[in-house]
Length: 155
Length: 155
DNA sequence: TATTTAGTTCATAATTTTCAGAACCAAATA
DNA sequence: TATTTGGTTCTGAAAATTATGAACTAAATA
Image (cartoon, rainbow over all chains, first blue to last red; front, side, top):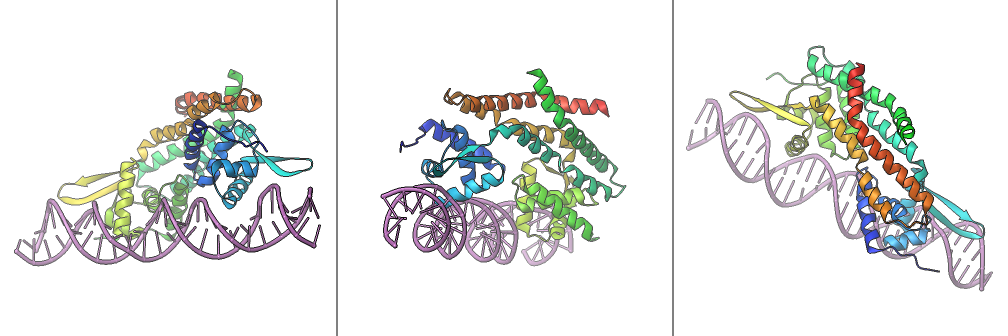
């Protein structure tokens, strides 16, 4: 079994990208796994390769992988007569992912609307600002699909 | 001193909005303070009113307020002959805030670029997908200021 | 000067998150 | 049947986060 290794430079990239992912609230181990899948020369890695390369425990690896599978960030293939799973980053999904990300940004809109509805008339300036925010969030949400189209047509 | 109170419905909105804010990684107490500032009938609240309405300790209130002041999410005014500070949500800043939020979304671009540079030529499809992501992120980043302009002209 | 007000700071307690290690399991192989 | 492989699950420990309460401070007031 040929040992899979990553370089020092790659290790640093895994950490950097991992930390970036952490900002979204995902647990550290899962972030490292995801980052490794992006940085690694091999696009397909086994459970053992992930565990070994990252130097984390079996249970941490298992937990992280299953989290990422559930979150649809990872997928795996199998090969006939081979019980191992070969994991890979589901990056082909990036368009859907980014659109989802953006609409999550705008998802505070309805709540702000609800809040604005119950506000007293007296705080007019405040309410108006809130109304503007809501309007922009709605606009943004409607605009999201066009952004992708615009980018595609520009290429 | 007239007691400041919020209704049960408002309390629920504070929790809802608070939880929303928590998703961005801010600590719970600060999220509640921020949410209260948005939901409350009064747009200006004192330290004591915040502490009392949220039922949190002095130190938690102090920490949360200072965090929000540093993050530029809160500001305060003072009144002559009054040692209290009157805090309010800095929501007039919302445009800048949202633009910052969006560019933070695209800030992974340079790192992905660095990663893509060191990838082997052999994983062509993977690299191409990464290149596409980067391209879209760059496009998006350039597009952000226009979004606001477009919205403003549409109003 | 003594007390009150409006907070800040510190020690520490409670909670949550995260991970490791061991035990376990099911399928495949010897 | 015994062992190996490829994991999963459970217990608990370590670490990080978060909040409390008490002590403190500086300014204002009595």
